[in-house]
Length: 207
Image (cartoon, rainbow, N blue to C red; front, side):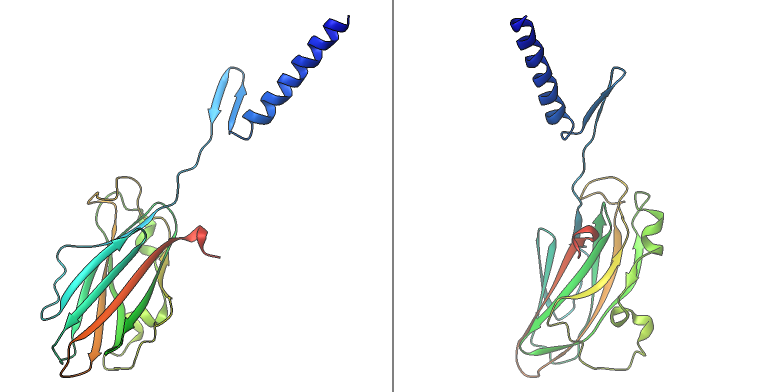
């Protein structure tokens, strides 16, 4: 009898151990069927199209993880107007922030002038539900003001829902294309350098 009781206790402990281990792992067995549950990591990626053209301004673009750093350099004292074509892919809601750094040039305008899908793997809601922060929305500008845009601290440029329905980080048809218009007021008679850093974040990581 003691051996039988010991055997029953062992069986009961094994069953309890199996329940504790398997349920948190996301596996459920019912009527002979097994269901595995998992999660895909949220990804938001920015890149610049190779068609970037800046005229008399030299441009250098470095992508590192979820950030994109654009460095602009020139000796031209004229007010440059630069258009940067960005590609944005995400499998979740997203936010894009920016910060401006320069010791010898002033940022007078930073606007998102165009947003359009690149193909059929872009969610139909992606363009409709993009939210531009008012000071980066050209519809709120009169086109003549040349005041300083202060983004010396990270500032939210835009946010929106999931963009990409499939594909990879290099697929040609699963991104939103954004056109950034940048106006600068450099100091004359000297080489000026500016850095614009854009950081992409999944919506769920923003508190």
